Length: 364
Ligand code: SAH
Ligand code: SF4
Image (cartoon, rainbow, N blue to C red; front, top):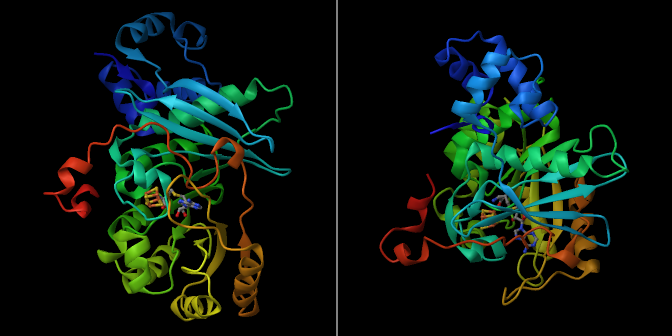
């Protein structure tokens, strides 16, 4: 069995080289070759002793998820589909903007949380992604985008964990991948430029704050428990008062002094003036910004996007109360790359067991 070096952060690589009887600085060298230069061929790692390079060929590999397809939207959003074995595939989206390039990456094949308006959730859940599969999306994207003649120096300036899956339901692997994103020898991104989005798994929010705080986005979507229980079922386990308290605790460790609340705008469901006013009361003690997301439809979703005028009015109520509120521009919907449209290919392993195993058991 060879070790996939993309599974290891600095500490993991140091341990790996110690087992080979090598010095810790080898970990630093390998991090640079693998992640800064995107090199996968040991024979080209010229400052590594030849005998060690030969040993690495025997005991290690550099195996990112394989690219299946690469599509470009009319608005320059680019969507990659990667194979992660057993007929499963995950999606990664690159969103270029004038001042930054954001990569949206997946953390699970599918998602067990089953939010009512999310196409990933509707597909069911297969498994957690490995570290190599999570960081491998950045590794691959950097390489694929670097081939673009218009690419700038740091093509990916921001990473958001907002693709398929619930990152906090795969905390250990996500934290190791985050450490690689932040490591100066690897991707060197600042904590403020890496945002994790969660539907609100409260104990894991506390663990993230301890282990690797990055910018936090919370998928709120409803101003009260009655509605949120229906839209975001994990709310039945971690209701809004517990979630708001967790946000406040998180902020004491966070690299930013606000939480971003994401709020998908569903026509006639959660988009009334009264809902906006209730949100103001709910979030009164949490320094926050709001990001309104026009609902992106998919087949048989049962929901409709709020009218632009309604979204504008909703935003105005929040803004009038002093909350910075942005409305997310829909990008990449012509190639199904917009929020909540990522479906990949997921061999569902959860539905059959749902009859006997409560849904929440799947979220560990
Ligand atoms: N599981 C995490 C991260 C992935 S989802 C989470 O739920 O936060 C990323 C964002 O897209 C979340 O805010 C999610 O609620 C939103 N989203 C899901 N389905 C959507 C849809 N159909 N239209 C618009 N946004 C959607
Ligand atoms: Fe999972 Fe997030 Fe989709 Fe909910 S919105 S089903 S948590 S990916």
